[in-house]
Length: 74
Image (cartoon, rainbow, N blue to C red; front, side, top):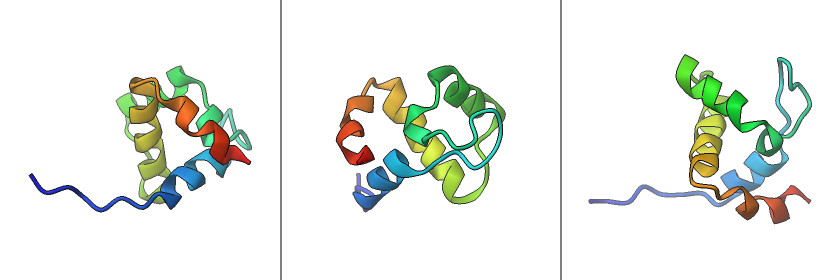
């Protein structure tokens, strides 16, 4: 099985990017409530970069790895 290339900068982006719309507009993606991220998973993530980031965030929250992003918030 071939591994996909991974850009570590995406974790910094995930830790520092604010939600651009909705109930949590302005809140950092990494700080979004888990139930909100799960709701997106069920309804479908938005297109583009935001959707990719929310999908990654879902996986991180699913496996309880949010603490990996804490030092990157600065």
